[in-house]
Length: 146
Image (cartoon, rainbow, N blue to C red):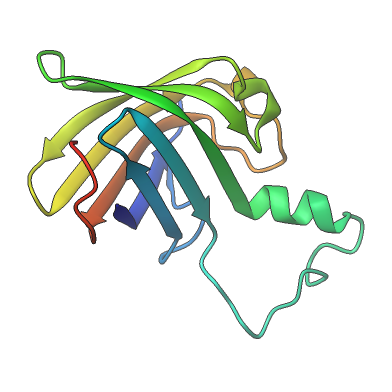
């Protein structure tokens, strides 16, 4: 199991953002039998409520803007340094039944750096996550390779 350390997105104009803040929360799990699960959310602000800044949104819309979750099977291609996540279920409904590929930029026993490109048409909620992603994960439990 891996914990999210940082997440940065570079859009088509070269602007860099941290979509879920300076301290996003997340975990990704890869099991030895080829299953994976990922959850990412905006940094936690205990002083804020779901209604802060979201007067015209439903609770579900607000949560969807601050949380991503998906699961399925995965394949790790060591030769091409890619992880393919075969999405079986997702908060982003248009990801269900697709394969999302992650480039493995760095992998050792304690650190996993993943890159991904997310096209605008694959993002179904208000948070603009289109662009080139760089996510850094830190291992907290040895469940499987990667």
